Image (tube, rainbow over all chains, first blue to last red; front, side, top):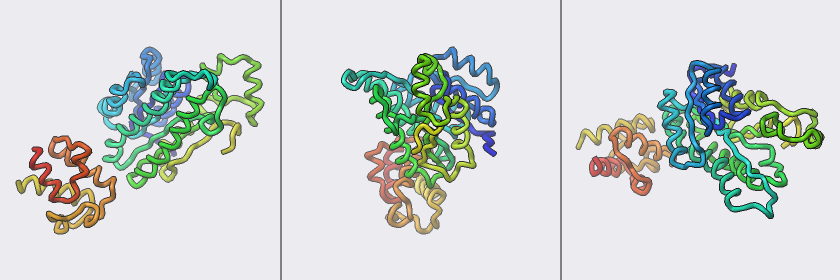
Amino acid sequence: MFDLTGKCALVTGASGGIGGEIARALHARGATVGLSGTREAPLSALAGELGERTHVLSCDLSDPAAVDALPKVAADAMGSLDILVNNAGITRDTLFMRLKDEDWQAVLDVNLTAAMRLCRGAMRPMMKARWGRIVNITSVVGTTGNPGQANYCAAKAGLVGMSKSLAQEVAARGITVNCVAPGFIETAMTDKLTDEQKTGILGAVPMGKMGTPSDIAAAVVYLASAEAGYVTGATLHVNGGMAMV
Amino acid sequence: MSDISDRVKKIVVEHLGVEEDKVNENASFIDDLGADSLDTVELVMAFEEEFGIEIPDDAAETIQTFGDAVKFIQDAA
């Protein structure tokens, strides 16, 4: 089950903790992976670790022209584009009353608009192939909201609505569009929290522990697989019970 | 001329799975050949690739029938 041999997957934000683990998991199932991110060094390091069936595809997701070009670049490099994982995301946290236009725009541009552009660019090869898997990484806070993250939550909730609409348009073409919504996951971002902050957050997680990037990667592998072919427009929450929605 | 028409017809027959004799000059992709709106987008994509042309969105909207498609491609090629 969940064999991805022969499939080509583009993963954005592959230089980060969750994105890197998603790429590792897809690769371990036999997929060829295109590692995209802004920082080339961690991408090259990951490519070196994974070995064959790996392509480094650096891209600045705040540059619309570069984002529009990426699906074709990826398909040319890998031979096709069967799986797209929109994982890249940024935060510009601030209280709403202090929220600046540029903090709003930057988060929307990278977390939502870039994902839209990549989905749009991936449509042509997927429609022709009559097969495709799009997995958009949202967040539990896209559903629950979170103080200080109005921009991030808006983008993540927007991603869910966009995914559902696209899912309906292309369902009859063998293309599924789903979301994975991580809860509190151990990454460089959460490492910065104090023990006190962590204890506070974990109080809201019934499992009493943080998730790991591989918990997210496993959900992505499932949704990217042939076995998940009847699942579309869904959001798979991976949050230790933090929000049961 | 007929070469373009034949190539367009082949794409339409293959894509929509219709009988060749149904694909006549005035056959509407949506009303007569059973295409949905996404099929028409895919047909335009297929025409672009087959003939190496670019069909802008506003022009694509005017291509309603087999005859429209052949005429547009003849003019563009």
